[in-house]
Length: 119
Image 1: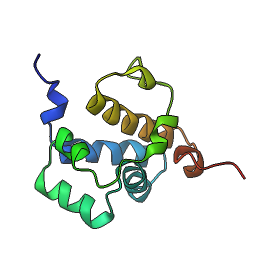
Image 2: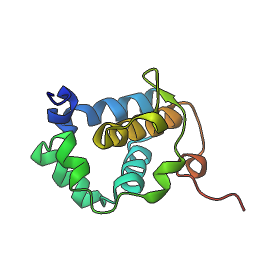
Image 3: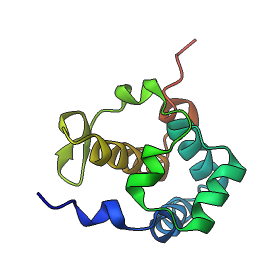
């Protein structure tokens, strides 16, 4: 079976769309970067390097330094599909990121987006 075309798309080609979506709703690029870092473990320099290299989505997630185990707490519908029901691992990671960016654009607090425990 052929890979979904998003796997071969450069992460850098979609990244500005994430930032634009956040900024249209009064959020910041720094918050988008914080979400990406939380999900993948990429620091700012590593993220910038991945963007510069035009790394594809599949490689971006496959080489992520530290995929956050708390991502399993991300639930809900994105693009008409429940993220927790997506079986293909790379697609699920992509949709987790989409869901987090959606939550940012909808005004959720960073603590809720990053699944921080309520104190």
